[in-house]
Each structure stands twice: as C-alpha cells, then as structure tokens.
Image (cartoon, rainbow, N blue to C red; front, side, top):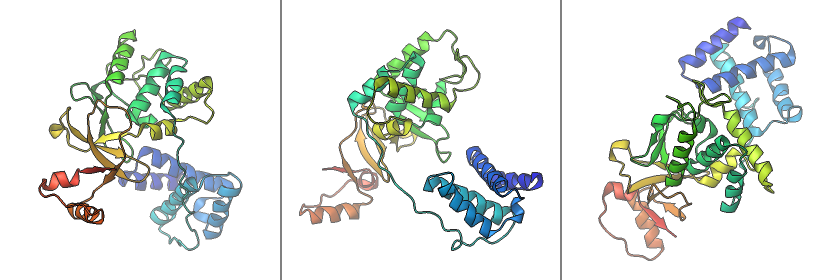
Length: 313
C-alpha cells in the first residue's frame, strides 16, 4: 500500500487537487482496502459494488458523500492502476437537494446573544454578516479587512477562488471592539488559535462549529441551527467587480442563492436581505421578457448595464 499511496499522492498533487480532497481520497482508498482486508489493487468491480452498497446500508452515508467516495475509487483505478471504469457497473447515486432552514432575525439575535464567550460572539457575528463558510472565517487575516471600501477579502474559498463580501458597519464596530479587547495583538490572523488567542496559526473550524451548536442550545431554538443554516440565512453577497473599479458607494453585488447567482446594485453597508430579483443574462432575454409582459423595450445602456441589470418584481 505504501507504493500505491505514494503514486496516488503524486497523481493528485500534480493535478493540483486541494489538500482536503487529497485527504478524503487517500482515506477512502484505505477504508476500502481495510473493509475487505486486501490490497486495493487486488479488488475489482464486484468488491466496489459491495462497498458502495455498504456505504448506504452499513454506514448510512448521504448520497453526496457516497458520490465522493466513488470518485476517489474511480481516480485510484483509472489514474493510478490505469484500469478501466464502467459507469454502468458503478452508478452514481441520485443527488438529494434539501432546502436549508432559515432563521428569523429574532432567532439570529437570540443565537448571537446566547454565545458563551465574547470570542464566540464575534465569530457568529462574522459568519452571519458575511455569509462566509467556517473555514473562510477561520482563515481571515487582518489585512483582509478593508474598512475604506467596506469589504472583506475572502482568500482561497471553495474551489480556491477569491472573492469580496460586504463589511457591515456594525460588524466593523464589533471587530474593533474585539481587537481592542485582545491582550496580545496578532500580527497575521484575525482569529488566532489556542485558548488565549495568541497562536501563530488560525483558530480551527471546529471552534466555530462548537460555538454555533452551543449557542443554539443556550438560545433554546426549536429547530437546529448550524453554520450551513447561518450561511443560508445570511444570503452572502459577493462583489462582482474587480477591486480597482469597485466603488464603495455604488457596487454590483452578486447574491448567491441555492442554485443561481443573482445581481443587484445596492450599498455595501446594507446587511439586510435584498428584494427578490430576476437575473437577465443578455439584452435579448430582457427584451423577450418585456415583450411577454406587454411592456415597451427601452434603448441604451451598454453591455455592462445589460449584463448587470436586475428587474424587481
């Protein structure tokens, strides 16, 4: 297994896979081998079929997790062992899409106020105000807070993509209070790790998860509140313009929903959920929509206006 593991690591890294993906893929192949007590290169389609069934029946994994496990095995057999892979013999399970639980503003206030420590409180406020993922919040640096443009730079988010999110004035004030309360000012990470928050590494994502779970229990929320719930409640807004052309007073923000990206021009200082919008992909699509609504089409605008126009309804 040592030789095969080394080859798989090399194949994953030369394709520039994320470290989290590499870890999951390696662990999947090792788990697959331990399940049958044999080397993975000695296992074939029949063992893969049995393993896939056991992921559902024995370990009760979600369909999306099973799909990830199958992708790891497919990579191992195709890229490492140079064997064929039959999609008909190893079908991917159908995806299941669940609507997230949305917290009311009152429930969000109860959740944040129920934080046991001030450090947990600022973490929950940052999660809600920015709509960032817990790993993105944990890795925030001091230099990522841009109080001049009122944005927060998210570095290396999901898919290794950078983006900007709005910085609420209330969150900025809370971050300044948090900063003044630190006995030892960090030089790099905004939320440093260890018990006294003085480590040279960022806080772990488990701290953010536990902070949300404990606050939900203390607040006595009827339905479960988790970081994905805060992520869905916040309706994260991402700046769609490059940094040099983005004006703090007027900026086009892309609203990330479950399946689509929508755009509306709003003030970066706003934190409340924006009105419903319908995204127009092109000027021709806009004209077609107006024709159906028996409205005369207006002229002018330019390419950027046609691409960044949001029709309220």
